[in-house]
Image (tube, rainbow, N blue to C red):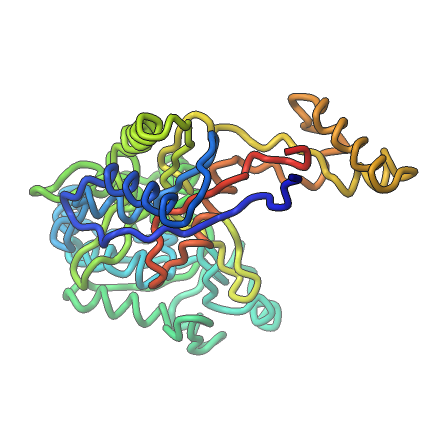
Length: 396
C-alpha cells in the first residue's frame, strides 16, 4: 500500500526527572514504552530528541546566587564592573544578575537598544525615528532614555526591564548606573573591567573590548566554567544556557552530553536492533512574528547529537520541478518523472536551481526547532520527542 504520511512527530511523556536519576535508562524506557503502547513500528533512522533541561536536572547541574557572586568577586575584585548587552529575561538572566550584583561593588549596566540580542524590545523602532535617535551611534543615559521614550513595558511579560534590572542590582546594596549603547567600546569610557553578556556575538564583543583597552574582560561562558565551592558548572558555556530554578539558584546547561546520546543510541540498538539517531536540544532557532523575539537564547540548539544528524539537508524543490523541469507532464507521468529525478539527484545540490528555497540549515537546528515547538516550555510534560520519517522524501 502506498504511504500517505511523511514526517510524524510525537511528544513522549516521562517521569519527572530529579538529580541522580539515570537519564539514559529513563529515555530508553519511555520511548520503548510509548512504541509498545501506541503500536508504533520503529525504523532505522527514526529520531529521539531529549530536552537539555532534563539532562541537566539528572546531572544536578545547579548553582546558587552565592556561587555566581563568588566567581564574580574572584574575577573582578572591587573594580566597577561593566555589565553589557544582557538579554531581557526573568528566566534567563535575572537570577544571574543577582549573583553578579552580589559579587560587585558598582555596576554600569549597558543595555542595547531598541532591542536585546534575541529581539526583546525596550522601544519601538518607529519611536527612534520620531525622536531622531540613531541606535548605532548615540549613547543615552537613563534620564535621556526616559525623556525620549518614557516607561515602556515588554509586550509579553509586562515588565519594565530597565527598572527591574536596576532594582535587582540595588537590592544588594550595589551602586548602579544604566546607559544605552550598541557599541561595545562605549563601556570603556566608564570602566575597563567588563562582563559581556551577549550570547552569539560574545567572541566579537570581547575582541573589540580587548583591542581598545579593556583590561579585565570576561563573558558569561567564563562564569562558572569551573565549579565554585561545589557548585555545578559548564566547561564550555558557563552561565550561558542557564535557566531560573528557584529564587536564588539556576539550572545550568548540561555537561558531557555526547556520552549520553551515544549510550541511548546503543541501548536502543541492543534492545530493538534499530539504529536511531539521538539528540539533546535546547532552544529552537526561530523568530516570533509578533513579539519579534528570536527564540535562541541558548548558546547552541544542540549540545550533542549522534553522527547521523551531522550536516544539512540535500533536497530539491518539488514545486520547482513541477513548474519548470516537468511542466509538460501530469498525473502518473509527472509523479514518475519527479521520483526518478529525486532518486538520481546529485549528492551536493548547493547552488542548484532545483534546490532553491529549501533552506539548507543544519539538521540539528531544524530538528531542534521542531522538537522545541513540539515539547513547548510549559506543562505539556513531553520532554522527549520521537520523530519518524524525517529523512523520507517523495519517493519513500
